Amino acid sequence: MKKYLLAIFVVVGFLFCTHNSAFSQKIGYISSQTIREKFPEAQQAQQRLQSMVDDWKRELDEQQKAITDLENEIKKNRLIWTDIERQEKETLMERKKKEREEYATKKFGPNGEYDAAITMVFKGVEEKIFAAVQEVSLEENFDIVWDKSSQPLTFINPKYDMTVKVMKKLGISVEDLEKQQEEAVKSDPRNKEKEKPATTKQRTKSRTDDVPSKEIPR
Image 1: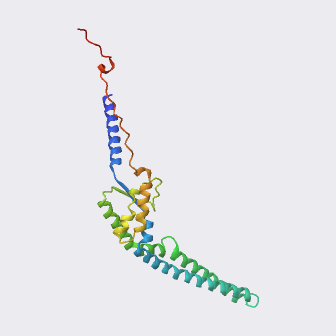
Image 2: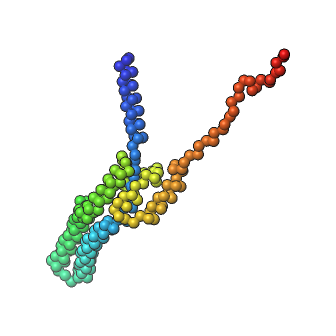
């Protein structure tokens, strides 16, 4: 019985300590999407990536045009070509379709060149954003930092939003965003100081105050 009670006390004590530890942690959050949208280096990286994508799409369009032209040629000359000529053209068309499909998969398929390009182009940008988050977290004594762009948060207090501070570290102009955050913090009822209840001074009465005075007989 004593061992059973001891085990219960140990579990309760562990849960109590864990509960207090969780509440003692300082948790903040950022919006990496907002940072990337305003970060000039991220914008430049996006332009480089888009330029590569445009080249690949242009090549796919040219391949499709060649296929379409060949299809029209086959339809136009189907009756005047020999079976061998028609078969050669149809075989050529099938090969071109396959080549285009393979090209599209190579560029935009799973683990294709597009995915590799994203990692390559944005590597430097992501490293700088990560470093800035680390600096702000240490300066502000945050224990945990969430990214609401990848992990949506349903209930958050804007005063724990580190996005503007991280952007400042990266040299990004944040005047408008800073004002918006200040207004959001002020308008959030959780950040308003609670009014202290008015204290009413009451005069304590002694028993003699309630008893009418009597003349002492001489």
